[in-house]
Length: 87
Image (cartoon, rainbow, N blue to C red):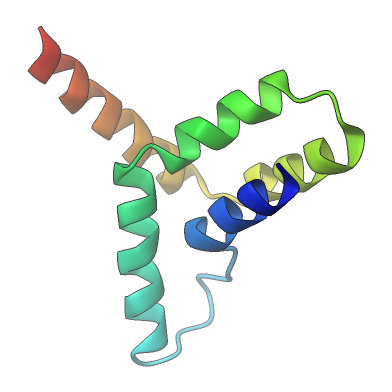
């Protein structure tokens, strides 16, 4: 379980947006976008709510606390689009 969560977090990208590294930053943004579009953030939020194992929960909370508001806004936009497609 821990390896799965750490893999998702790695895909979600835990990097500083204030540091621009030519080429690498762009690739990280693409991977992060795929992660969000694949419900990666939603999965991590659900896991955080359900997991009782303290050390794994702390890893999840640390990741979620380091996200920016724009990440949550993008996920909300995606959820709205998916909802419209279903209705």
